[in-house]
Length: 393
Ligand SMILES: Nc1ncnc2c1ncn2[C@@H]1O[C@H](COP(=O)(O)OP(=O)(O)OP(=O)(O)O)[C@@H](O)[C@H]1O
Ligand SMILES: [Mg+2]
Image (cartoon, rainbow, N blue to C red; front, top):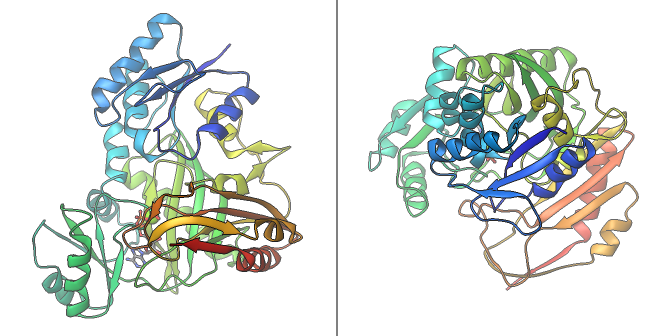
């Protein structure tokens, strides 16, 4: 029996889907997390100490071979890479994974690789963001170098706006800030898998809601993309070049790009698959999940050439409309009854304090749809989500 270590931060949405994928492959799972979960073979690791955690995982091998170490999301990715390196398993260089978690270092590597990306300036903690933005030229996007989920990502159209953005980010993040040129154009997300440095594009999602700021709330993702095939071919090449420039070689990749008239511009690449529960919008071959594709690759099982299912699919990340105490989402049955709705999961517990963007970092939940065409999927998601009654006090 194959044995896989799943690095599962306690905050992840994705434990169940990865555990189910391992079960589908008949693999034995060891959970590595900051706390021992109930009902699982587990080991406790400090995810903020990649070397120490990697050693703990490498030592597991003495008690039976470890065939793969897989991070289920961003937080465990450096640990998984470092542990795989110690065990002699195919892996990303840990420094490349770290670079994807530091937006300034990622920009520097993409620049070295001449990958199309926004013009950028790194402003040291406490530096003059308005001045840097004025030199760059407006509009700009100001963002923390080390947060995710669009937390603290703010567009500014003039020097006053840039200074205000920096003030608003200050309570969230006290490190370096990035000031980037705002890149207009439709945004897409790319799900890919790297095998020995070669990128296979598994799916491209369109994000049909305009992302023009000042805050960047992701809502609807729909696949397949409706952009022209030539643009999508360029997108695949640009994301592959971004992976190479950053140094990524193995495993899942989540890329985000804007499609400008001059071609795709990379917003970022991450050494992980799509976040939240969004992967449930993807099915390959005869009912294979994205998690199973990732585990198959990590375990050295055949996984190449699996096609995404026929038909269109999409997910809406239900935004947090305002800050407060979350009470309920009403009318869920009506939303579920809209033809084409494939699922609705509310992932915030009642009574929890929630924050809207740019301070927030969670979604209320996820709504899924499947239909014959991307346009229908988009309509279904809009119609069903408009029925939901969110109460925040
Ligand atoms: N230079 C830019 N030009 C245009 N839009 C941008 C730019 N930088 C960021 N954005 C918008 O803000 C969103 C979030 O930015 P970014 O991906 O850098 O941060 P993040 O916190 O990692 O977000 P997430 O975790 O949601 O991917 C992007 O998906 C994009 O819509
Ligand atoms: Mg992003």
